[in-house]
Length: 384
Ligand code: KIV
Ligand code: ZN
Image (cartoon, rainbow, N blue to C red; front, side, top):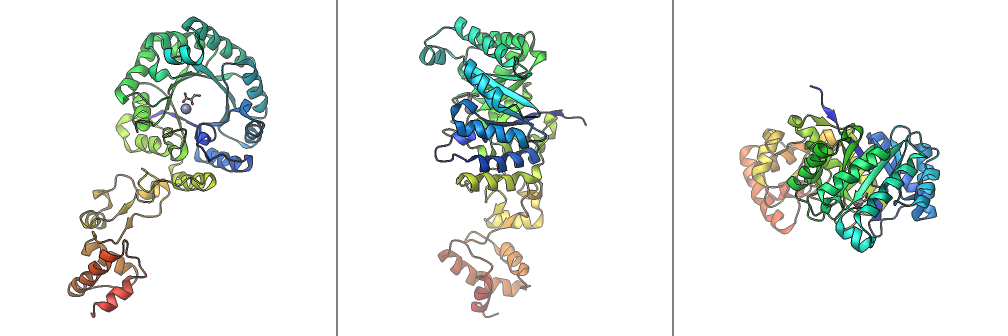
């Protein structure tokens, strides 16, 4: 059955790199950009070119090497930002300028000391100006999550008229509930008269742990691009995690949505970004955490040994993990012990297994995890 494509806009190198202490050098960014291109992301947000000479240079170099994805540079709704971004993207095969401005009353009042009419004018002017340099213009309505829907719809209509090809609706503060964010997207689909001329993009932050759920609600309600980062890294609690949204869409056939991502590269890419940024992946992280396919309780282990699908909804091979792990801890059962002993050459009979299990539990109560190298010793102590 035909599935609608959701574009993946990766912002690991821009929003992701805003994590304190995780700044990358151009050389490292190039390694990641190359991998993102192989992974199949549709757009790579390579940086915020006006922010520093280093970031400008990174966008220039990334633009030269990326073969398939669009390369995007972030700007404020400011002429100089747009000129600098356009300059940095000159060598890109598919350049995109990502410009925008805060649209919530809070941003309008506190950040800009301004009013809605002025913000609308600046938004339109920025898109028109960016359009002089490149065709593909994405507009972000910063803090759209807390922006009044009628005003947001007006902004969207006017920036599309000005030439925007993508409308980014960020939940900048990670405040929205999934159904609220989904309704916002649906409202725009139903109330922006020229919406057929642009794609709506979800850009959700994870302050309440809802970034993935919100992005999925967004695409269920008509958005066709998700902005995300590898391992969900980003400011504060991070951005939507790329691996999570990709696998949600892949596992849920009934949504009829898919991406261009080669999921077999997900685990390796996660490790690469973690190492280059010096930021560990939490062990229980969905899809790519070290425990995502590890089973430690006896009941679960028995099930997985009989049939993996009893406790796993994803085949680890599909995300580049070699195999599910059966861990040996004090919560493990006989099935797990027999399974692991067999793997290193001990075929234990039922009586032998009972004896070894007895010794194993004493050992496991002291040691947090029993390894393959402990097993011969435990078997020897069992006198079988
Ligand atoms: O979270 C946000 O609103 C952003 C914009 C700059 C796109 O990152
Ligand atoms: Zn953001």
